[in-house]
Image 1: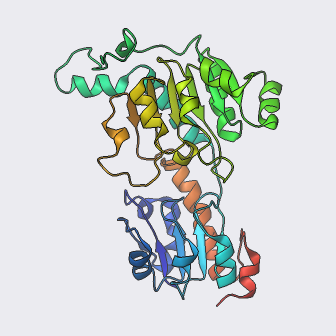
Image 2: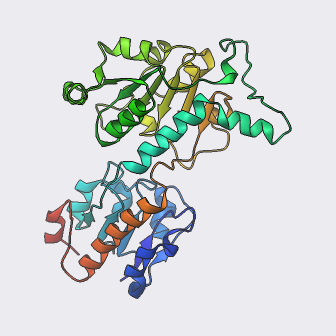
Image 3: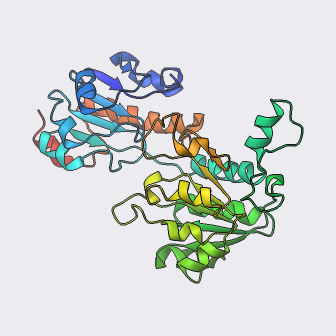
Length: 335
């Protein structure tokens, strides 16, 4: 069985304890990334089983049709829109889903909030160049003393989306003495109120009153481009906008434009429209943007859990007892 594991940027998978589950099958691991249907179809032409690391590579119909030997895609975490499941079913490619865990992305969200609000990346970068207690954030468009940073206690934390991750972040906000408010669907707001948090009076009030605003939404057609430039322009010049969910939740180009205009004053971002991000991306050039390379789930315990479940699905499939298949009809037409 030809098993390929894609996009292991840090060459971490082979060193996981759960990697022992695939040792008898001699899986091949790629640590570099190729883009485009042509390059991917060449790399994967002999693959019978693919193990995907979250959404690092997309599998549209055009690519799937060029992989005649492929029988199983085993997803780390939940299956998302990066896989054309309908095409997989038609082509007889089973798709196995793994497990999810909100802890790592929620903790990264909070780490980014703390780091950005206290200007840690800027202070650390300047200290290494000999500047003592200088954050470097002194542009004329910034509020007075913006570079000093601010504590979280007593400020308002806005959370758009009250699912598993949003709930954890709300709890962190409460522990730090913040006033937590939630926006989202009526069900989300009702759940937040039931947990003792406030629901924002309106979308406009949500953006206007939040000192820290963080997104925790799934990317679907209804949420694509949901956050607009007008929304961001309502934020305080001292406010922080955080996105560890999906870049496409924000209207194309809106965040860079808003940061250049000073509302919000700062952003902390872990996700980008195209990944790996190119070095010249506008967000990387802004002094008031703190950027991390999509590491919300990149953490040892999460890797063991995600890959352990994905490898279990692979072994079960090889042993002709498929598990956690999201498109069982594919098994009926399997090649």
